[in-house]
Length: 306
Image (cartoon, rainbow, N blue to C red; front, top):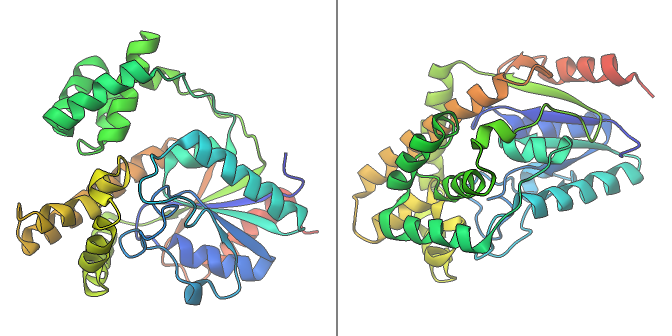
């Protein structure tokens, strides 16, 4: 257990989580711990909105650039590394600030969360189906077996679809039924950024355009030379998969942009729905001028000032 409390900043894509976390870290002498498995991959910078050293200033940000492009995302490995970072931050008598939009990774890091076993043969069979038929067809199979889980996984997220189907086959139960009631592994005050859909969609569109202007296509081309197309996880990331389609001549650049925006907006809405299910989250307006003060208020209310 961490001897210090934790602040967790969560919410959908483009709501301003990282900027808030950096401002907060300056106020309470904190260090950031990310929950974005794609930001953990070296070289995936523009398309993941990875904070730059200039943006971070002197603030340390853990779980960035942890793995190579070909690494297969593993939530248990990620959880263990993130928990090590949290313990190290607390040992240095600083406040860990967990920040990100991944519901699964936030829960895995902060809560007691048992993951069902895996079977290489079963997973390999579904991965072969994914490779042959594509994620949309596999998603339809998941809908037949577990409609609740299917409704919360993007049809293009082949990795998560495969995992859900694997667990269903191994346990004989719906995947969603295995999610336990939350029990905290680390004490944390959780603050979510509330943003209306119109503003969120507009900010996502603006962010995608900024990514393209900043060289997203060139970034993907560089990563392609390092094996991005064959990377089991990174190649399917939002933004990267669409650019790969464009580079293959399958879609125009205009269509590519539209697909990235649509996929990101759809993902952000799912983030909002999932986070809404956690009653521990204290919601604050994303555009409040007193946002840092509000988070500090929640923090001191729960843990007091030392």
